Length: 364
Image (cartoon, rainbow, N blue to C red; front, side):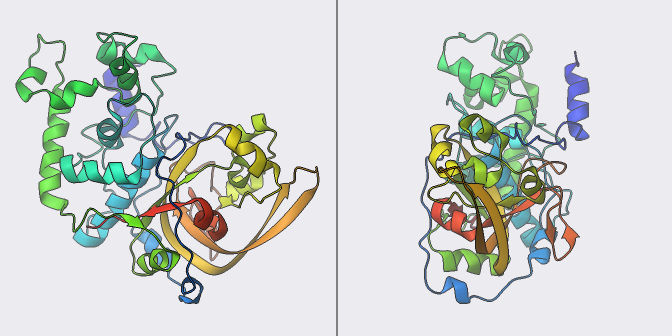
């Protein structure tokens, strides 16, 4: 078994954080509670193209959320890192703590799902430390409860506090405790690491996080594309259709998946009459990504199985490009734009995004 210090060292070097996520095990979160697709207006198709490669050049590296349902946390911090690189000239190595934001956004809850609205509000209120200060643990403590014995074991195992502790990997009440309590070595709540992270988060907030407004939602398609053309990436949360994503969890629902599409980072659309459209809602889940660009003219073809047993090919014109949080060696490992490989990125049809996606911008 790893010691705590050895695990932290391995995580800091990305042994776990950059690992691959298999198509059958890629983590998803709960069904989105903020489901509000944009209005598709008449202007959006006439907007000119954009330099997607330039947008990607301002992103930080693709990371992996491991086995935890923390996609909205990764998309929120991916977007924040992108904005800080643009506004303050910070380097590609900028790496903020998903562990801390997950703690803030999910503490007290008994499910792991969050959303951009909640995450952005917590960043504005509390700030965030650097990854090296509070390292992300890719393991799911709710499935391996022994991992939480040190930090959660003193809580009533039947309580919501204990269940929440396993999800966020820390006592939910630590945020409310004083530095004196957390630095008392004889206290059950002794946690100097959290004190350091909390203080650094406050300093980071005071230095960098000046929100221009608290209105994040982007409600129409032409505004979405105008943001992207101006160099402003967005987050998008959505319900998952397993066949469109070629996610292996759909196999249990009788949904066929295509590993070639998965490697290409291609996300289609759950057409009416397809097995995907019919069966995916039986196992509802959600996901969140960073939208980095669009191409109104890119055409993709996707084959899918229909409920009558036939296979049909559908053609889509128009995609959004996105940065994912499933590592670089599985989903999107062969993703290409203009013959350049961007592992861990993907593209989703605008039809899927406009029907099921909820878009947010970060007003910094």
